[in-house]
Image 1: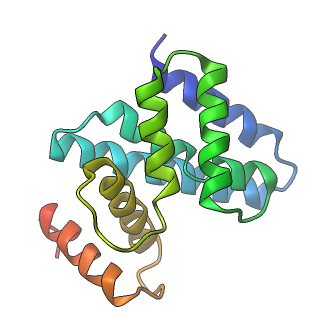
Image 2: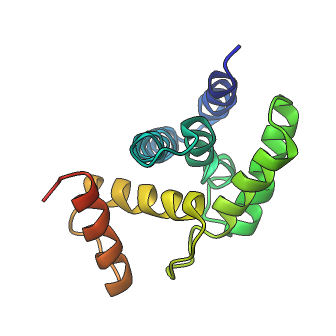
Length: 153
């Protein structure tokens, strides 16, 4: 079975188990939204779309599961637990996804393409769903570059 489908099954099961209907809707939009933008940007940039899509799916998995905002460190740790349970990702892939999630909130740019992609995808999802949301100057520039890359605006 496709690894991405296995991760989606875990995410869907977690979403179905939520009692709060608003959290189900928020979780689906957040997790699948970021994942979709990760896939699109990965294909555009020639990166592993599956790893990027999984990172997007699991970025806020723990927050949605727990029903509250939690640190990226906890989210990264929970993502690795999910991947270990599924059992079809190697250590390098799990470490990459963990790093991507762990560093997503750092606004400064670095040379790690996968980490930057997740930041760009999250920002793009946030902007597309709510253009009026506050954005720091650093993220405004990041967003402008990402939109330009996609020939938008």
